[in-house]
Amino acid sequence: MSDLTRSITISGGGLAGLSLAIALRRRDLPVRIFESGSYPRHRVCGEFISGVADETLENLGIAHAFSECRRHRSFSWWQQGREFHQGQLDQPALGISRHHLDYQLATMAQQIGCALQTGHRSKPAPFDGHIWAAGRRPCDGPWIGLKAHVKGIKKASDLEMHLGANGYLGLAEVEDGWVNACGLFRIDRSIRAKGPDLLSAYLEAGGNTRLATDIRNAIWRDDSFTAVAGFSLGRQPEIPGLLCLGDAESIIPPFTGNGMSMAFQAAEAAISPLVQWHDGKIPWATTVSEIKAALRSQFSLRLQSARLLHPFLLKKSGRTLLRALAGCRALPVRPILSLIR
Ligand SMILES: Cc1cc2nc3c(=O)[nH]c(=O)nc-3n(C[C@H](O)[C@H](O)[C@H](O)COP(=O)(O)OP(=O)(O)OC[C@H]3O[C@@H](n4cnc5c(N)ncnc54)[C@H](O)[C@@H]3O)c2cc1C
Image (cartoon, rainbow, N blue to C red; front, side, top):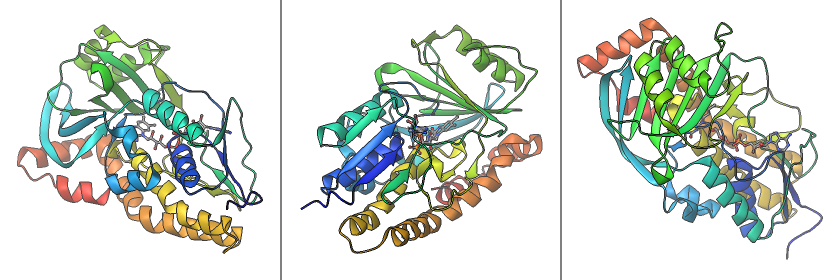
């Protein structure tokens, strides 16, 4: 029997919040979710899911949401229109738009009895049973993320990663032949472009002129352009007593293609302590500290590794070294991938 006095409140219906809600409902816990936006909608995200085990998706009860997604194996690295490395992933990455995935998960959550309220902006207040999964925290961080779905771009591999002087952009297919073009760039206040023109403007400013032209001339999916600016990467500042999951807890640099996987893994790590709390076996303070310890032990190495590697992509000397290593086939791709997974 479910104890209605110990119910779960999740603020944020993105991947961490929805997948946790589904997992807990499947274990008969009462769950309500508050989401500030609505579904379906496009989000800034490369939509390239790498490093999550099938077992995690099954444990969360969401594996079937991925049955029809793209499976990506090949990848290549580019600079100024020139490919300098190509390779194959040992485990395929999944390609599915957030427009589709978040909507599917929100529908699934409601079908199994989660009370989901959209258009509701919660406050980060610590109280028993409250989980903060509200994603990136607005701050004066140096980054801008831009994304659109396009058609008509020729690709040489499933994932193309294009490095520039001011950031990078990935190209990977999602459903219906659309290609996700998503980049992370350092905010440049001298760029005057607005709206969708920002994407090609940032690519041009970073030296990827040909790609900028290809993207400008591509067919754009209606309403798919989205932008988010001013956030920081890495561990997010703690809010005393508040249990944070997903990007609200830590943000891995997007080049890893691992942020969505981390959202699922964080949700999975939270299941057992939350079930024990609901069953009255542990107090809320213990639940919070157990989950925080699990997240630290699971994510610390990959967050630190990604933090050390990220500057290589963003500094000229780093990119030169990457190209040189790739040129003599000495780029340690497998060890790097295992550190950031
Ligand atoms: C440029 C860029 C590219 C990326 N590319 C990739 C990639 O290719 N692969 C990958 O795995 N990851 C990628 N990521 C990271 C990935 O998008 C995130 O790690 C992932 O979305 C985290 O999920 P989440 O549930 O924690 O947060 P989100 O998915 O952001 O969900 C948070 C939810 O909370 C809601 N919300 C916010 N505030 C409130 C509030 N006050 N009250 C209620 N609801 C609220 C939001 O509307 C949102 O629905 C990328 C990120 C960026 C910036």
